[in-house]
Amino acid sequence: MATTTEMSPEDLPRYSELILPVLTAVQTLGGSGKAREVREEVLATLPGADDMVAVMYPNKPSSSVLEDRVEWARWTAKNIGALEQPARGVCSLTTFGRDLLRTPPGEAAARVVEIDREKRREYRQRAQTATPDAPATGGRSEEHAGDAPVDAEAARFDTADEVSDISWRDTLLTRLHQLTPTGFEEFVLLMLREHGLELTRVGGSGDEGIDGIGRAPISAVLSSRVAVQVKRYNPEGKPIGRETVALFQRDAQTKGAERAILVTLGRFTEPARKAAISATPTVDLIDGNRLAELVLDKQLGVQLAPVVNESWFDRFT
Image (tube, rainbow, N blue to C red; front, top):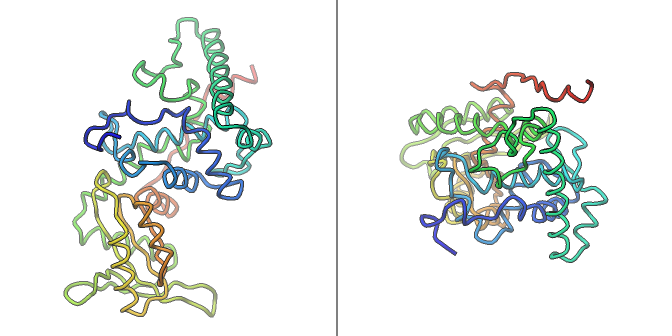
């Protein structure tokens, strides 16, 4: 496989090739999972994902092509009936999806492609009927027509909290990376306090790599001592490896922490994720995507405005 610097979007799996891995990921998670959990499971098991996830769109240098295609694959799996969405942001396997996973991989892949092709054909026919002069790609440029489901508008609104929010996530992570290291530490500690942690900021010489120490309430009478480390790494840079996590675990243990939290704007390798739960204290890893979710949850400088999908109402005319 080509190195990261040599890779281009054309070297990566197409979204259609990621549909079965998405279904497998949901099955591994117990038959259902949140979008973030599914994405992380796919990237954890896909060979070479650590290198491939670093390939960005030429015109969107902070957007991972592979992560984007995993999201489209998950939406397509739902569009063809292999997944359903019982609650906002959660997907679960359908009977058809389970049947696909019991089918020999080659046959299942061919079946997925055939159904997806039929769905694309149906959409083109509807689009051309509604707007005779509309391009066959459903409004997407020819450059990306083969990289995502043709029903891009439906996908955009159907998964508004997961796919169409890529741009705001990029903007947020870019803005956070523009903060000074001290400013970013202060922001992360604020965000964690908003989520219920009671923290004291530490730093300077002798802090053993700890940026915050305090307690995470478990109940009205129980709490856990927690250590926090903040890494203002470039969202587009190399992912954090196991060595960084293992070193932080040692430092957190020195401080008497029972749990630890490592926050970064970037990503973590699979060995890093395994190291986080293989020794004590266990480390909760918060990557850029998870950080964005936590920031949005408390609306810290981020608000999503309601958007009206006018075409959704066409079914009633």
